[in-house]
Length: 102
Image (cartoon, rainbow, N blue to C red; front, side, top):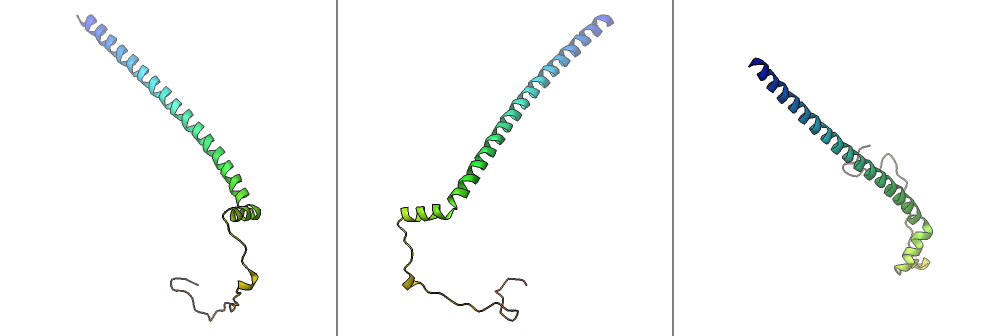
């Protein structure tokens, strides 16, 4: 009787261990798939970042800005309408804007 109870207990323990192993393997594979997906997304984000950096550098060139301004109908200001302001040099005695620390 004790031998039969030990055999049943050993069988149940073996079954529980096998079930735990299967669950652990499934979880491991699932996490690996998630990792691969995240790495692929990170690579795609790196590619997008590089592309956008190059595009930003290209679009910030003066010639590109001028072309965009012409497309929008902007025109250069007339020199006769341009007013130049002469600002005094900043000195230690000049007032500071509120909230600005020296």
